[in-house]
Length: 261
Image (cartoon, rainbow, N blue to C red; front, side, top):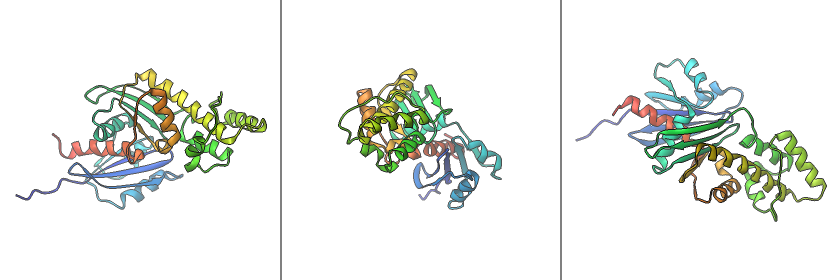
């Protein structure tokens, strides 16, 4: 007996630095895409959606209300980032108990119950300290490509302490260290260690339990991943596409709307 395929459902995570789209059909990812947010996030959303046909669109991320209010489509829904990440993470790793997302301009720490419900969360979205933007700023200051910054930090010969997480003061501190002869790689590692100290504090406040899923653009950074595992004393799970966890969760939520259990 041949059964009709279920409707296509699009999940969109509209972040400060990038916009991700995941398309689900019959519970499977059939398409994904992403674009930089730029200064026209709505236009970028329209561009992504023009490439697909979806029966339902679920938006998450800081720009979710922008899409909800401006897209002339009654089949658009919005959910919080916390809810989307919980759904996406559990789909990828059903055993996950803690989620860390470090994006372009915010950090989220989420603790889950054994059945995948959100138990507690903390979100830093008022300061770029410890986020992808901070790493980008400091990579420029040290004249290293952002994509290579993590590998560069892993070349350090010793660990040093960076006391400030403010981008302006951290740059000043890094400049002062270089003037005293400290190697750029050692400074880069010090900056990564400062991010881990700040992040670990967030995780402990929500009650970190393994396994931990590391998501967001900064999860591509090998130094952050290594130091995070070291700090927690446990392995860190990183999806093949860590940027897509929120969009996947949004699409999973939409799938329940078009085919309720």
